[in-house]
Structures are given as structure tokens and as C-alpha cells.
Length: 162
Image (cartoon, rainbow, N blue to C red; front, side, top):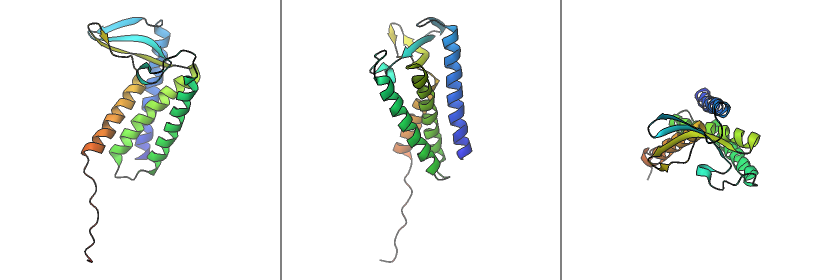
């Protein structure tokens, strides 16, 4: 199973980085390419955390978020390594989150910001731009929450000696 988790992490990171590089080379900052109604490709630089929280260009939050991402990535790697074979869905969720965290960590460490390019909107309302790494984190988190909320806990052995 660890090979599958590694593949999920690598696919997430590589696809994220390739799309960010391609978008950065093809577009000017904030340039929009309409793909279909309610969806654009738009180059944006996010200096903050999720949804541009603490988005202060050149601020000290760069190293704060880089450090947090690095620590979370190490924790997820250790957690994945310690999973039992029967926890495959948990492993998939963690691998998606780890792949996304590493993808954004690379951006933040190398450039000081995360490249976002997926823009979803409705009329005059625009959802904050995001990227493949954010999507992997979101999907992994939804899966993790689903497992937490809906998975039946393993039955504890009963002691019949009493």
C-alpha cells in the first residue's frame, strides 16, 4: 500500500507543479482566460494561507507558513508510514493532503508565494483562486472527514471471563 500512497503524493505534486509552471509561463499576473461560463484560468500569487488569509506581500508570514507546511508534511509522512494495511482509505486521504501540502510548500519556499490559477465565479461573485495542490488537500480532507464521521469503529474484543 505504501507504493500507492507514494504514487498519489507524486502525482499530486508533479501535476500541481507542471500546471503552475505552465500557467506562470503563459499568463501575466491576473490575466484571465475564460474556459467556460463560471470558470477561468487566472494567474494569481497568494502570499497568505488558504483563501489568501494573511496575504501580505513580502511579510514574515512566508517563513511561518513554510515552517508549518514542513512540519505538517513530516507529521503526515510519519502517519502514513505507520498505517496498517487495512487503513487504505485513510492512507489515500493522507496522501492527497500530503501531496497538496508539498506542492504548495515548494512554491512558498522557492518563490515566497503560492501560484493559484483556477478561478470559479458566479456573476460578480468570485471564489478565491486555487490550484491542484489545494484541490488535493480539499479532496483528502473531505475523505478524511467522511471516514471520521461515517466509518464504523472496529468492534472491541469482549471479555467473556466475567
